[in-house]
Image 1 (cartoon, helix red, strand yellow):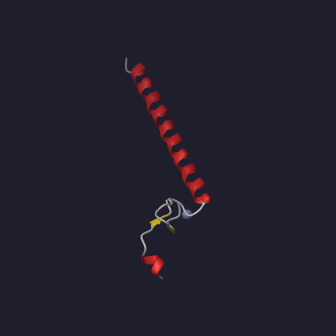
Image 2: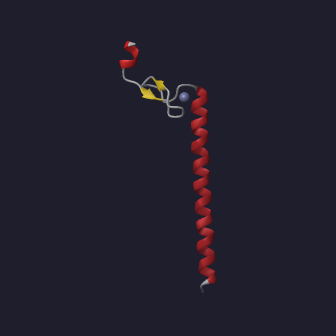
Image 3: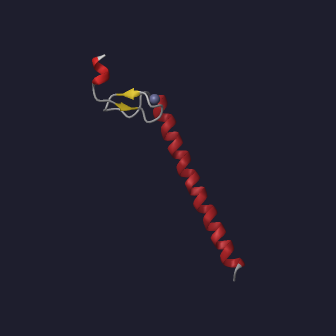
Length: 63
Ligand SMILES: [Zn+2]
C-alpha cells in the first residue's frame, strides 16, 4: 500500500504505473511505443512529400 504513495510515472505505452527511472513497464511496451513513433514520423514524411507534389503541380498548372 505504501508503495502506491511513492512517486511514480506511467508507462508511456499502456499507462501502467512504473518506477520514475523507467519510461515503460516492459520491453514489449517500449518496442510498441518506438514502433508507433517511427510510423508517425514516416506518415509525416509522406504528408510532406504529398504537399510538395501538390505545390509543384499547382505551380506548373497555374503558369
Ligand atoms: Zn506498458
